[in-house]
Length: 361
Image 1 (cartoon, one colour):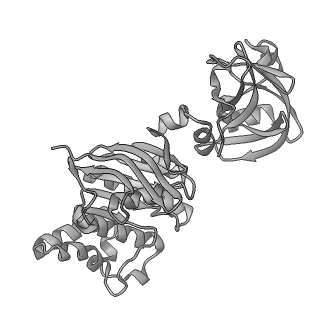
Image 2 (image 1 turned 60 degrees about the vertical axis):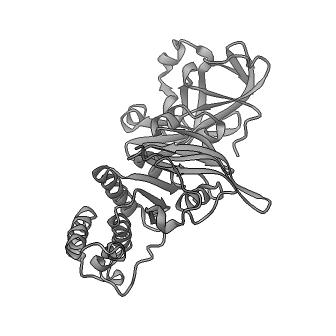
Image 3 (image 1 turned 180 degrees about the vertical axis):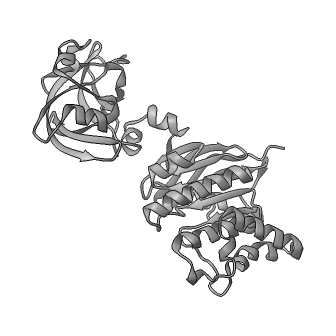
C-alpha cells in the first residue's frame, strides 16, 4: 500500500485572515520536502495542519490512502521537531530519547537497542548520561531529533529546527539531518525561511507566498527556472530590468537588449530577471566582437565584495543597483577596483521574462 501523504485543496482561515489557500501537494514515501517562504506565508500553519494541531477549514489530508483529518496528533504517528528543543531537563540524553518508546510500552531490551542506535546516528553516544543543561544548543537539537525518530515515525515534521543556532552549527546539523533521512528512509517535511537550508536539504522545495504554493520543484528547477518574479527574487539573487517588449528585444532607459523567449509580449511591459553569475565580464576586445552588441554595456564599479571563491561587483544600470559574480581568478586578471569602468555582456538566453503585472511581493 502506498504511504503517500496527500493534501487536497487545503484551506485554513482565521476569521477574515486566509492563512492557507487551496494547497494541493503529494509527498512520496521517503521524500524530503521543504516548505520555504517569508514570515507569514502560511508554511508553519500548513505543517500544523499536517500534524493535526490545526484543522483545515476545508480540504482533505490523506496518508496511506486513508483520510486523517479527524485523527488526533498522537494517533498519526508523525514525529515533530520544533525550534525550541522542549527537552525534559531532569532526564539524561538517553532518558529523553527513550521517553517515546517507553510511553509506547516497547520491551526494555528493544528500547535499549533503539536508544543506542539513535545516539550513534546523531553522534551523542558519549553524552548519553549528560543532562540538557550540560549540552550546547546544537547538541540539544540533536537530542530533540533523536527523541523524535526514536518512535519510528511514519513522517518526521520539522519546524525551523535550526534557526536558533549559529551558522557553523546549522551547516553541520544540516548534514546530520540529511544523513539521518537517507539512512532511515524516512519521509520528512521541513519548514524554513532559509533558502540555503532548503536548497541543500530537500528533494523538492515548495515556495510559499500568501498562503499558496507559488512553485514546487527540485532545488535545481527552482533556482534555474523560477516561474514567477517572486520566486526569482526570493530564491537566490536576481537582477531585475523593467522595459517594453518589441519583437525579440526589450527597450529600457534608452537601451535595447536582445532577449530570447519573448512571445506575445509586443508592446507590453515586462520584467527581466538575470542571475549575477550569468552576466559575463568582457575585455575591451571581446566587447567589440560580441555577437549581440546591444547587450554589452559599460558600467562603473560601485562596490567590490570578496566572498571567497566568488567576487561580487555592484554596479548601476538604469539607476538600479545590480550585481555580477565573477571568479576570484578572473577578478585578479582584470585587477578591478572601485570606480573602474568595466564591460558586461547580458546573454540573450540568460533572461527570465515576467509580465509587468507580476509583483515581487
